[in-house]
Image 1: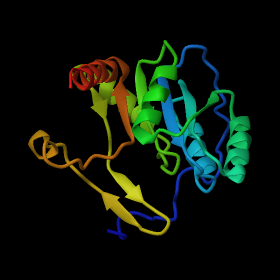
Image 2 (image 1 turned 30 degrees about the vertical axis):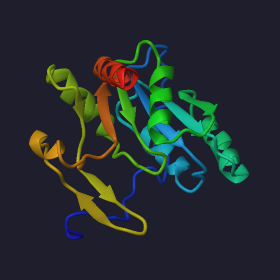
Image 3 (image 1 turned 90 degrees about the vertical axis):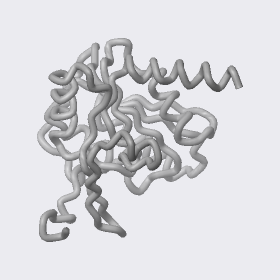
Length: 196
């Protein structure tokens, strides 16, 4: 596989031309859970700031970090762009942290982008995912293949197969999701949880 992808081309190593666009009504809320991750947070955020699609906000949700160096790095990262907002909460784990971020998303946000603080986006990801959902009205979410870097170089190519997904979760968490569909699934999940 290494013949097809140069793993040294990690997105977000350098902040590209300034796309510091501020719209009071972002279309996408990028939700990044954060927990003591000083090593990758800057590169991950820069990979979002380098996007060709500028109509987003970045919500970094600190899930009760205790490491002072990580919290200092997080504070420094917020100075990179006006679209970055940080929320601090008690440690509850990844799922609850993503849900917290979804609740904090802008009312104008039509889409939620879930991105872990050690994941990177290729610079056209948001634009391609946005137009995929805009032109496929029945689709609830869009995702792509992913590339592993750092200690373990790999490509993750998994075609959508609903029957296989009922047995195995093979999709990456970095996906653009329609906010209305996320809320609908969340309501169903809460009803089931309450009725048990």
